[in-house]
Length: 293
Image 1 (cartoon, rainbow, N blue to C red):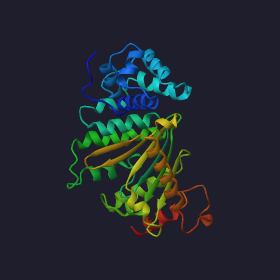
Image 2 (cartoon, rainbow, N blue to C red):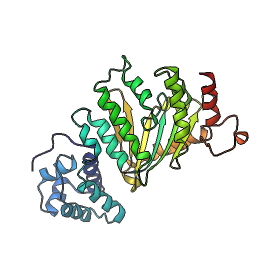
Image 3 (cartoon, rainbow, N blue to C red):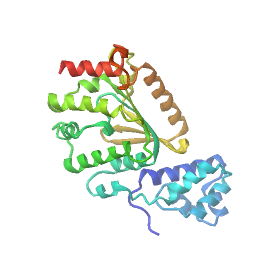
Image 4 (cartoon, one colour):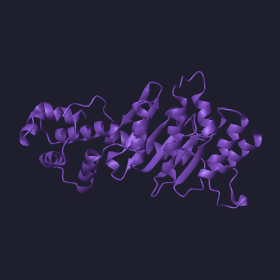
């Protein structure tokens, strides 16, 4: 079997986890490979995500490494056996690997926790708002129509059967950013209110009046699958996304999100009667901005 020329985040992550297990067991690549009848090079390619591993071999490796935790091992097997051929594969000739990796991660999520300081999160964007971003001349986006359709299709996870819970904290500055006309901004703000009606969606606004540490944090999304140990923090930057997968990183970002959420305004809750709303909750702030447009 030839080596992969492109390694997806799922494939890279499987290799990373196997390498972690080997190192925790105190085994060298040669020692581990010898115990299951592989060459050092074959195991090295598996750990780098450059080649697949048969389920039997994967279970053998877990046995050699002393890993018998069933939910975790089952999750590794599922990662190994996945074809990766979801809806996002139709875009692989038009978009780079980062959007495809994000869509695959989201497809297996049971929870997504995201912080955005300057943009409305992609899962919440209206089509006109997204188009305004993609057509901004200074941002240099290409394949705009393909990228636009891709982002709209990503949003289907919000209303699929058994959708993930999505908790977003959006900095107030993102609500003031003018992508598109006043009508585009108005439509986007109203869309946030409508999305908050979904039982699996929680939206909070982090106001200018709160402590500034959230603004300094930058954007990130903590994508959490059924096995939380295999979660991923995705940090999008100009030159590409960074995928943080070490347990200490996951713990740090989980704590950071909790801290940001605790200091943000109360979530949008359209089920409450108008007179019960605090003047300082997320819905009140959005309604104030709508009034000023």
